[in-house]
Image 1 (cartoon, rainbow, N blue to C red):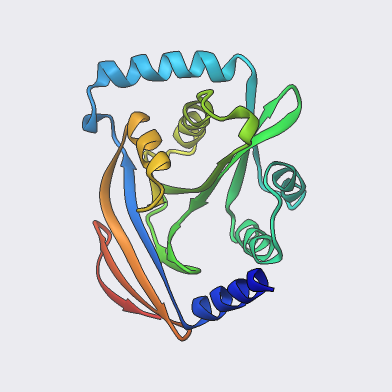
Image 2 (image 1 turned 60 degrees about the vertical axis):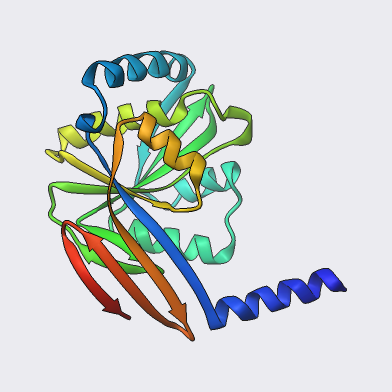
Length: 211
């Protein structure tokens, strides 16, 4: 009874007020020494790519693969379908044919918060929603993913990659820094009674938004 009450109160609170605090990170070897980055990437890639194969997907059947890695609720499924229709692509990592990792790529725009998108130059991409199966964590899959993504983006003449990371996700922040990302901005949002108040401090947008 108490558990159901707490869940109801949490849902009510989220409808009234919630927050989304994201820092924006840019892939840039200059945040770290080139030699260290190359050595780290080589070692991690050897660990990851020895067993993990990455493939790019852009059709709805990729949602079945993602659901095997991390079951999606209805809201997450709706968002994923919407982003596939918008041209986003999902990268799946396979271990002997079994999906164990996924990450998403957005082109031509960047999500600031709660479904609010900012147009971006076509020469840039935005990575989001990375997830590794619990059985495959701490095996260098993130580095393998970014190695694969880097090669794919170069083939598309895309040379800039941003990611958004929650300020509370310390593990992801540390992992991205190890992979050559450096903080370059933020999107901080307070959602009050359905209205989003967002402070964007980013090279492509430095202003206050109300949506």
